[in-house]
Image (cartoon, rainbow, N blue to C red; front, side, top):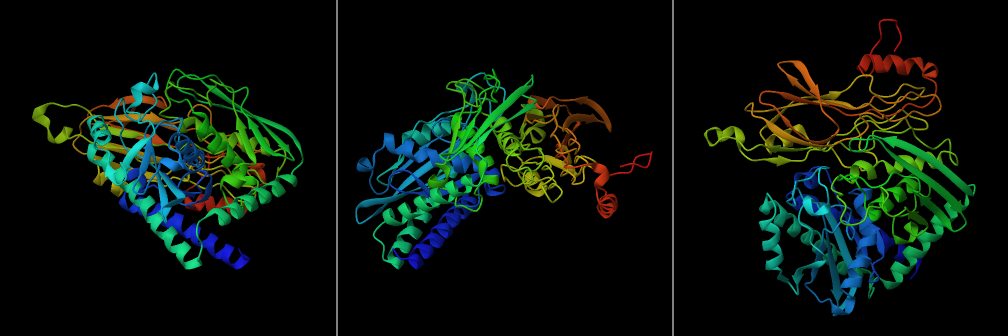
Length: 547
């Protein structure tokens, strides 16, 4: 293939997988997918190697899905697949880390031969069990697990599987609809891929895929070679479920690539904050890619340069049947740990610690009296709220921004349209970003009540309440998060960051997401920036005239 054709084909592949992701968002039933982009999409060669991924989506989904397709092919070899086949699983250890994520894989045929596979993942709102949250004691309590199976076999729907699924979830229409959405987005990718091959007069993706993977791997190795070889360690203490946990990592830089080892991390938890290894590998790899080779395409070639390991039965390598539903509460902290290691290699490129983990509560109805049916209409929503990122090397941190997940927030209008909740307040929390020459990003304050004054349930998976994001180089820590209940305008009680609680009748729930850490001496901050922050209400002046 000549260079022009390679570049044209590469650009087309990127457009195809991005359109695949957009089809998924436009057709998804779950609000968290449709509004927040909690998904992944990509195209794979016939060996199960990811060639290209959509920009839309999360690193946790993308990088764990990258490892998933080869596992599908081990159970369903290419020779057994046929046109019209669609495969799926939500097994946390074969997919993307917990039961709410469904991965669907579709083989693409041309002239009776499989030439590629498309895969996509999305978060399905409910899979039964206790519901999305950290409180289960094992994975069996967390919902329905579907091993790698046929969703469609030669174009015929697997009615038994769908009947089992619909009988075990709280909202069967949404669950079934999301599976059709995943199927549709893969089909759109397959159609566009065949058109591309016709336009460029290519028989398959074999030659192009080999070039993409080889060049990506070589480019990544070249970036690694620019770093000083050695071992670099970092450690972070975070809230855990009810007792603090330690995330410890050592990054090894060598001519062979970059290794990340999580030896020293706390052991597995009795609750559902454990992280399966594929999700750990996904976010640890992303942490590396933030600094090293971030202009190199993310695919099986570039990812092969990064090797992530963790001791069995530690918090970030939990094995079945450990509870893993809230694996993101720990897993999304891992990029900050990896960046802390790389700070010794690239001190001018690493931001301060941020809020990291998204705050994605599940709100649902309680069982009320039949005489009060309107106030107790059933509902389940899973909105997304974000804290602040750490201050960046040359800029302040980003306020209320999802890093590392990239999951967008869900609007108050959508949340109110899909539930009986009212969102009275959603605003920046002043002074929540850590002070510094470069300020940390701000968190936000959200105030919520039931429209009819009824009680409602909140399932929480929050961190950074007891252990805030740390600043760097003399910068201050970000403000920790807080969750509390107000009754008649007065604080009633604080709630823990994780677990299920009932918000009493007539009360309001207040969520304050964490801020990011600052970088550098706060006294060295530019006076114009201080004035701008004061004018915007991002910081307040204390009684002693300080900030």
